[in-house]
Every structure is written in C-alpha cells, then in structure tokens.
Length: 261
Image (cartoon, rainbow, N blue to C red; front, side, top):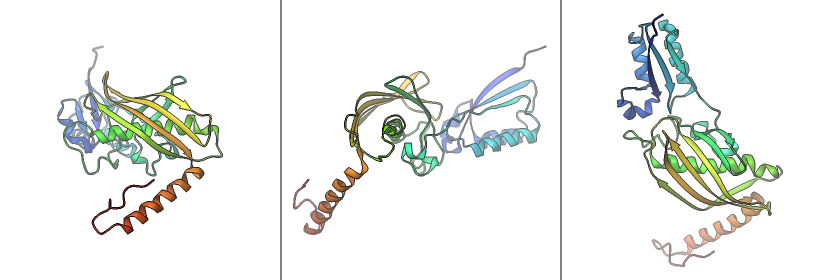
C-alpha cells in the first residue's frame, strides 16, 4: 500500500494573523475557509493540524465541525492539546482568558514547570498585538502568575486557615529571543524560601521561558507573601497617609510635603 503524503500545519487564533504569513501556519478562519473550499479533500494528502496559541475550545469545536461536515475526518487530523489552566485562586485572575499558565507541575523540590497558555481575548492582547511575536508584557505577566501559582499550590497550602497577600520586592526580566504564538514551556527555580514565620513568607526565584529549544526570557524575582490580616492594617495606614499628603499639598505640587512612610 502506498504511503500517504503527510503535511503538518499549525493553527493559531485570529489575533495572531501577523504570524500566519508562514507557509505552515493558519489562523482558525483561514483553515476553516480552506476546508469549506475543498482544499483538503484529497484523501491521499493527509493533513495533521496542531494547535498553537490563541485557539479556544469553542474554536476547536468549530474546526472539528467543519472537518466532519466536509467528510474528510479520515485524513484531516486535529491534534488538540489544551492543558488545564491554573486555578483562579492560584493565578490571581478573575477571568479565565487572562490566565497565562497551564499544566502546572513539580519536577523536584525546587523546580516547577508549566506551559504558556494564550487566549486570544487575554487582557494584554486586546489593545496591542502587532507583527509576528508576542509582546514582552505577556512574558512578564506569565512569570508573575507562575510564581504566584506555585506559591499558592505548594507552599501556602501548609496553612489552609490563612490567606496571603503578595508583595513584589523586586522583579527584572531579560529578553533573549522573540516569543511567538506557539508552544512554550515555563520553568521556575525557587532559589530560596523562608517559611519559619507563617505570617511572612519570603522567596527569591528565577523563571525561564523556553520555546523551540531556546530561552526566550528570564525573570529574576524577590517577593513576600504576607498573612492578609497582618498586611491589611499596614496598607490601610499608608493609604491614609497618601490621601492626606495629596489633599494637603498645594494644587499641582504633589511632592510638596515630601514622601513619608
């Protein structure tokens, strides 16, 4: 029996149309149009479609329905891979489309991994997506969600009766290569974890984002998880001082009284 010709195509969300200039990249709309026009009807030309970024479960169903209606399911294969996103309480996001990490897991005592997950309606993409690469603020936010989710799932759960408020002490991201709307892996190395005082947990770490065998970016972070009950009073007092300072300052001179802590 003669072996079928096989072609691989990666489908991305319509938000990433600028990336679909490549021969083997299609947006959801482009691929559905090709299917409807009969471009993939030849049973000897096997097509395997793999998922890139920005394709929702709803859109995957749209693709599957288009293939079934055309009657080409035997030679057009949709390889859907959608790991579970981090939970709302872990990523500190109210809306699922704004969660950037999925498939969170632990490799050893210090190293954790996840996959980058980009929804086409993510808040960071709605007003700025040009060219082919994903903007840098997505990388920074993915790193932030990574250390939050790891801390919530693997550290603060030791004290289930407590709720924690996270304060970033320092964060620095170095960009090494463009990030594109394709699969990417996030690795988080917990460099130090001070857990002696459950009211104040201190961490330092490094988050690396890898794609296509290269590191796209690395983020160094230092942060503290405070017991919410302890921090709320401090935050409230400083907010009071800030309000008082602004209201007492001469109009147009918000630094007149100097900064106070």
